[in-house]
Length: 248
Image 1 (tube, rainbow, N blue to C red):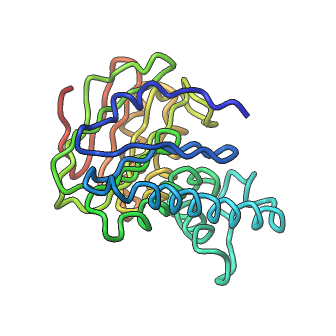
Image 2 (cartoon, rainbow, N blue to C red):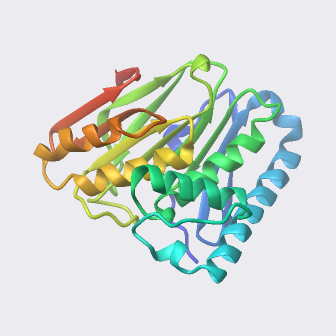
C-alpha cells in the first residue's frame, strides 16, 4: 500500500521533540516525544510499533466476528468483554450518534498516546489528522485542510494544565474520510481522542452550507466530554468551548 506523504507534518516538528513515523497497513502515524528521551528512542519506537500492532489486531479480530462494527453508520452495542479499544470506539459512537469506525483513527492515536505518555512529559501522536497531545509547555496547533494544506489562519494554544487532549478533524471537501457533509473542516477537542474523532465526524455530517455551522455547534454542545469545537465552511468560521483560539 502506498502511503501519501503528509506535508503538514513538516509544520508539526519542534526542536525540543524527537520525531518518527510508524506505518502498518492503513495506519500511518506520526509521533513526537520529549527530546530528552532521545537515548531511549529505539525502545520507544519498538513500543509504539507493538502498541499499533496490538490495537490493530484487536480491531481486525473483532470485525471478523462482528462485521457490522466496521460498516455501520449508527452506534453498535458491544459486549463487556470486548477489547478496550473496541469499547472506546463504541462508547464514542454512542455519544456522537455515528458508526464506531468514525472514531477509529482517533481511538488508535489516543490509545497509543496514553500508553506512551506514561513516564514521558511530552507526547504528540497524529493519525490521519487526528491528534493526541500531552505537553509540558505551551504549544500551538494549526488547523489546515485540503490537498494543498490550506491554512485556516487559526489554531489552538495548548497548555500543560490542559492535560492530555484529543484534537480531531473531519472534512467533507478533501481527504479520504467519508462524510455526509461539506464542511471544509470540523474540529472537536476532548480529553478522549476517540470521542473527539466521533464528534468531528458528526459535526462534519451536519454542515452542508455555512448556515449549518450553528446547528453543528449546538449538536456538539450536547455531547458530554466535548471541550470545544471549531468549524470552517468557505469564508465562515464557528467556535465554541473552553479554547484558546489564536491567529497563525
